[in-house]
Length: 277
Image (cartoon, rainbow, N blue to C red; front, top):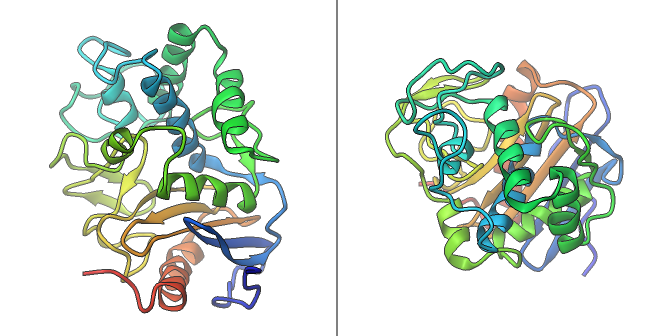
């Protein structure tokens, strides 16, 4: 079956954009410039996390081995609890004490995987994620925290992998989307302080956060990431759907305003009214 191309909802950003929706079997909707390569910004992180988890799956990295600052582990780094600030190598908090969203943590994580695997991290991503999923346009030469580029078409392939894994086991996939270090407070950039600020392994978990960039009808188990380039990738396991958005307009108030409605329209159309509780 060919994916739908009828608009899900008007995207009032006055800028080029791309939107796509997939279920585990294949793409169900495309809208806009879906083959255009655009900045992923922090949507790079769930892709990089997938590369890290492949190393875990292969026994080259252990989630609970030391990495980063004294007392921290791979698990702390990938779940934003190692104490690093958003940018900068000097820690600003105790390990495991609170959720501090950090680009530095992901760069340290990539360096640890390089040491453990013997591959430069971009080459590791090429060998495992890009070739493993047959991605066409994903560019991974930039920072694993926020430097990747790609298309909505490629992000939908990643979305299907996060719905029904082929690169990692079902057990590790379940751990990936399970809250790590439950109960920690933190700041979700662009949305403020949240208690709890739940994250899995490289994936933000929706839970009952309000406000949030996903929809009012998104299930609490929804996970994914958004980026400051005006990008998102979410996976709703209860709806059996994943959706991706890329655009030319950097993240701002218009995204805060329209993204939840886009998600709710997707759930209404493709999941029979949404899955939120």
